[in-house]
Image: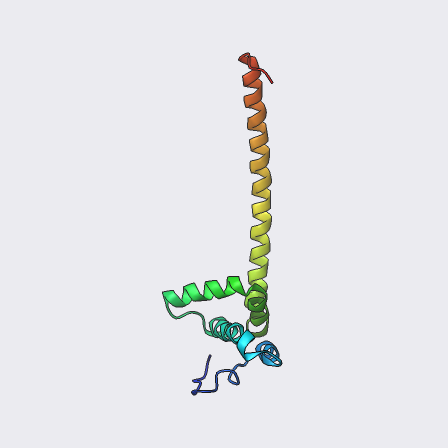
Length: 124
């Protein structure tokens, strides 16, 4: 978090309206770990990781809480989120095109090999 949080003020120090809403009605015993993770994620979204270990933790939290990550990005860095979503969409479209090309190439190779098999006297 941006400001120094004194002992005992972890939850009220959040700047995220989303996390504040998640805390309302949440169970201490059931939901605290989730909220703690979201608070860590909030700090990473706002300030980025500060070490290699932090980078690993950030990646793990983003993967584990994908929808929450997107909500926090929308709340704190909407311009970065928009760019990220555009890049992700383009990467998915590129992967789809490449997958289709690989599939077509594999099918053509299979046909060539089958033809060769038959020419060599092989059977169905």
